[in-house]
Image 1 (cartoon, rainbow, N blue to C red):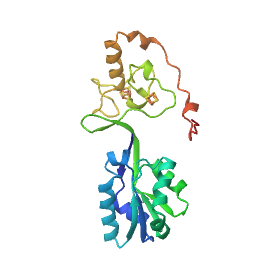
Image 2 (cartoon, helix red, strand yellow):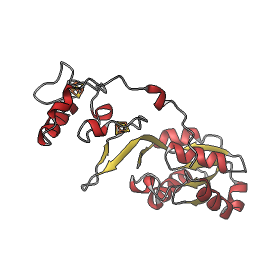
Image 3 (spheres, rainbow, N blue to C red):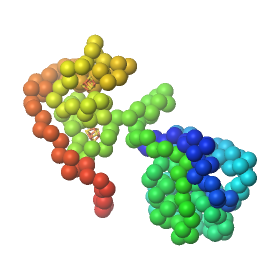
Image 4 (cartoon, rainbow, N blue to C red):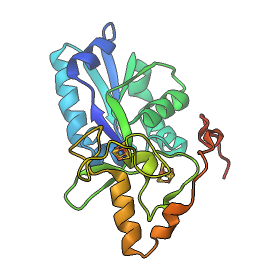
Length: 215
Ligand code: SF4
Ligand code: SF4
């Protein structure tokens, strides 16, 4: 899922300076789970905007605003309110914001209410853990399912740097060194021999942005 945090209110209000009629769009998937774009957050932001003497003319929470088919349906249901709005504030990740902009035929200014942080898994305690940098050439199969691109601060592919200290990363001593984790995992699987293979530098052409993929 895509992890977001709400922007500081002062930044949101500054971005809407000069606009008094606002329409809000949330996200029923990732941003709802992150508590940045669900029902409660829409209601709280509406209150803040109204205290700032703005009118919130309407809102919607498509399950995934990043999917054109879904956001189009929700915007169409709110044509009346949108027509009178001067700005659309989107409580979702950057994908959601751009999808709203691309699919809103009325063409109002579209503003983000959130900062997009990363793609992450959610553990059983509800923590979000960044585990993949979407590099376009997955090497998890080589490293016992642990991603050195994301978990090693330097993205090293051929073993640890010289700074690892007592199993911790030299860049942040609160974190385990990714390469210690990889070593331990390969050892459990009796595959330490894998570490003798020198890995070629990654082909960064595969991570060239923007991707366009037809299904
Ligand atoms: S190697 Fe790491 S960053 Fe690349 S796709 Fe696999 S998990 Fe994601
Ligand atoms: S200490 Fe380990 S995780 Fe940190 S940068 Fe060096 S190899 Fe990577």
